[in-house]
Amino acid sequence: MLRIENIHKSYPMGKSKLHALKGVSLTVNDGEFMSIMGSSGSGKSTLLNILGLLDSFDQGLYYLDNLVIQNLTETRAAFYRNKYFGFVFQSFNLISFKNAMENIALPLYYQGVSRKKRNAIALEYLERMGLREWANHLPSELSGGQKQRVAIARALVTQPKVILADEPTGALDSQTSLEVMELLKEVNREGITVIIVTHEHDISQMTNRIVRLRDGMIIEDIAVEKKDTICLT
Ligand code: ADP
Ligand code: MG
Picture 1 (cartoon, protein in one colour):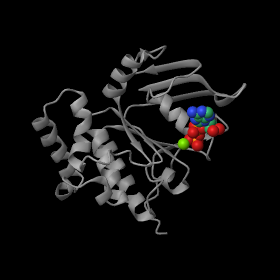
Picture 2 (picture 1 turned 30 degrees about the horizontal axis):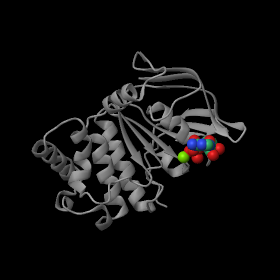
Picture 3 (picture 1 turned 180 degrees about the vertical axis):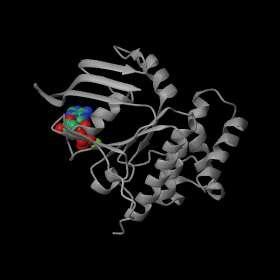
Picture 4 (picture 1 turned 60 degrees about the vertical axis):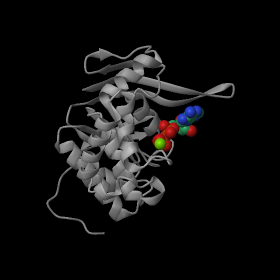
């Protein structure tokens, strides 16, 4: 479970400050499939980065399970980050000179897993993503959807409790976006908490809960009503 209380975050802006989060409180339970919505600049990425221990905050409380997150050294932050979180980004963030298998295997390299073992595990994930034949291809040889599936596999390979996805469909066409969302839903069904940042209404509607940010504050937090009809647009 992730719980933040009254989180404030400012960025230095010349001589003044930009108040990006203004007292945000949020509880995310294990197994949730939720989205954080809001227009550009509303603080979505800032919030996600704080939850994922990629960024610090100025004020407030953060409990990660029952751990109090406070003044972590970069080493401690990295330790908890690796233990809890998998990250997915809009621009995929794959390493261009490594093939699909090596990209997926990379987090295991940092965990000290042998090459043979990490490549075997990476191949299992590629199989799961339906990309087994693409193992030896470089990111530049993959479509956007394939790249994002590789990125999701890389996020899953360390068996995180939570996947944090910042605009994961932001660079994809609508059909591919749907496929990526289905994949994230499947990941969630296996018990992993999934938090998706998006500014797209349709994407947020596919999750079970929408937290809406405006100007660094939560203005709405709703459960999504699930209809049985399929909306074809
Ligand atoms: P969103 O993801 O919703 O577009 P962000 O969390 O990226 O919003 O940004 C929130 C606000 O903080 C914006 O006004 C943005 O310009 C500012 N901001 C974000 N990151 C930085 C940074 N590293 N330095 C200065 N200002 C930043
Ligand atoms: Mg953002």
